[in-house]
Amino acid sequence: MTPARKAALSRAALTIIGWGVALWVFFPILWMAMTGFKSEIDAVSTPPKFFFHPTLASYHEVFERANYWHFAINSIVISVLGTIVALLFSVPCAYAMAFSPTKRTRGTLLWMLSTKMLPPVGVLVPIYILARNAGLLDTRTGLVIVYVLMNLPITVWMLFTFFKEVPREILEAGRMDGATRLGEVWHVLLPLSLPGVASTALLSLILSWNESFWSLNLTSSNAAPLPSFIASFSSPEGLFFGKLSAASTLAVAPILVFGWLSQKQLVRGLTFGAVK
Amino acid sequence: MSASTLAAPAPPRQSARRRGTLALVGPSVLILAAWATVPLIMTLWYSFQNYNLVDPTQHGFAKFDNYTYLLSDPDFWSSLANTAFLVIGVLVITVGFGTLLAVLYDQAFPGRSIARVLVISPFFIMPTVAALLWKNLMLHPIYGVYSNMMRMVGLTPIDWMSHYPLFTLTLIVSWEWLPFAVLILLTAIQSLDGEQKEAARMDGAGPVARFFYIIIPHLRRAITVVVMIETIFLLTVFAEITVTTAGGPGVATTNLAFLIYSRALLQFDVGGGSAGGVIAIIIANIVAAFLVRSVARNLET
Image 1 (cartoon, rainbow over the protein chains, first blue to last red):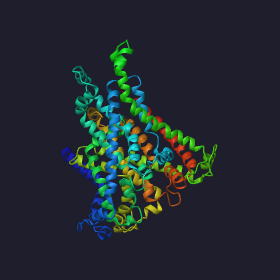
Image 2 (spheres, chains in turn yellow, blue):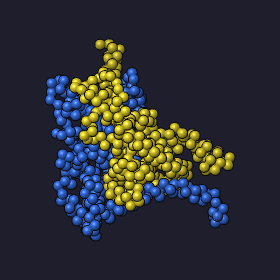
Image 3 (cartoon, rainbow over the protein chains, first blue to last red):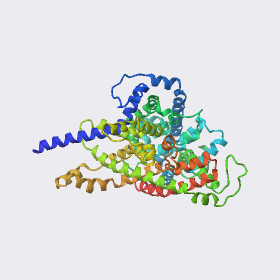
């Protein structure tokens, strides 16, 4: 075999394997999206149907009977509010750490990371009791507080690494022109590091949206977000595959798109800058 | 600011700035400190108390009763074993396949970036959806796609969730975490010097030799990070269990997280649940000590 043919062959093999694995990993999500558009009868037909008459019947049922919007609005409010509050705390903090580091900055950053290491289940009991005594059980406020604290170390770390990339001289030039610290951050730093701030916000949104430990334990109906909504399908309703799939697709679609958009920057936030 | 210029004869701008820095960092540090210490102290405190949410006759100092009760309970030991099985199983699968896939998606082929996005997608699926999707649409013994495929080739479908519940859960959680490993390891591989790979190729190193002698050593650090971060999250796998098996059958899929939940919030035994929580914290701390050290080595301020 000539080297050229060999190269072409290995390239073909690579393409087949690369796509095969990708489709296999992605298949459950694709199947879920398809099943959402099937009638309940098509959804459980054996053998499974790849080609079918698409219908919106399952979606209609999810919207009308299962009160989807109540949970969706909870999810949106909690994750957006939690992200905004987390940024309000972490932008000033990361700014100070990146541009006016002191002897303690390094230690503080590592300590923040270490708070992430506390397994939620270890403090389930006291957080539940604190929330109950403060009247925050099954409230959006309660979950927002928990999510801010849960994501704060990640947002501080991620912003810190992005801010470090902004040349100090640019900020100092602004300061010479008499900019206040707020002006420095608002007019110089944030515009320069906008992609970094955006991906930090996206990561916080994704983590809050999908969080399923605190949301299942601290809410029941009033403030329950989408993970709890899906959990309510566990049994025996789970056997309505069409409805389950439609509801699940609605619950994951927005965040899946966000995830695709921010995948490159996620590594930084998820590994606290340990892998670049 | 005027007070500080009066009080500080030495460089006034400097100290005002330092105070400003404190005001910027302070709020985050304060709320995190409260978050990290108050519940921890409460867990420790409760773990030494007789405290039941619905039984007011139980109160007062319990000495080590909650711990001795927990440690003498076979359910606790089986929950530890289940936790270990789940954590180690998911780690082996995700790191093993994650490394292979990272190498695969480091190669150039048509449509690679789309294929990558597809592989990463499960990471963004919320745990309750992932678990129900696999339990019903994929693995349901009658209607599941996999069962149908087995039937098509003449095999008898397996009722995965009833016969191999913990193993099946491990597979589901692995599917959720495989993208994380791929994402991190792929990023790490791409930072590997192209020249180094090229030089090895010139020296006649085959793909296998290059994998073991160049890529794996280069990935060691990234693999460590993946293992440690996943471990922290895998210790608290909860939603997947709640919606598929609720810890059963019996206690076959009850891990430490689910045991604590059922002790504290289903049986209202705050003392016992807290003792379990303390043990979870101790385990996580052992893991975390390694992680923090490995990150610290890489940090410049």
